Length: 247
Image (cartoon, rainbow, N blue to C red; front, side, top):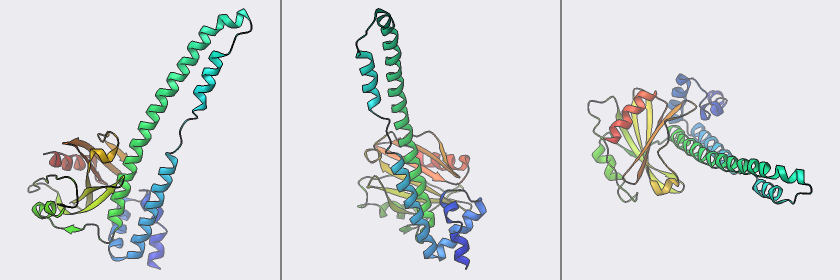
């Protein structure tokens, strides 16, 4: 009966619509209930599939052909011919605006899809019964664990004197490419720091500071690597951890 009450709120949890205290209670419940954790992961995967399908829409390419056909159509009267240059200019403007809008739309949707995928990975980690594969607060233990599992290396910051604690790490995947997911904790909140190769992102990984539901994200690139920090903490705390990772 207790799990039935949790399952009624699973969709709201995955969509980030629960109050913070309920989100924390959910995460604690996941640690002791494999069934609810599995249901949460299924919903995250379904959400990602639906979002990916939505991104497949592209404006109708026949628009350009119709505009060109209208421009090239022969005039039947002198009056129509006098208006042809103005029409051609207007049509060219329409094509240019459509091209610019399409370029902006594609870039925006790619960025939104990347943010959504990173948040989903973070939520899946929180919902997992085993959120980390290497459990340690020692950066000298966590970093060597990734050797041989990733095609790159990275540095971890010294957290002494900061409000953050390293919980551990795990291998994560984006566009079927492996990367590192490091879990940090501040107060009762967990933050995921993802590190992937720029070649795996297939786009500019320097995203503007973004919010997705109750989560915040910061990103940057350095030495061929993309860094993404995701969590449900406030933007100030997220920025502090990002600053430590940047060194």
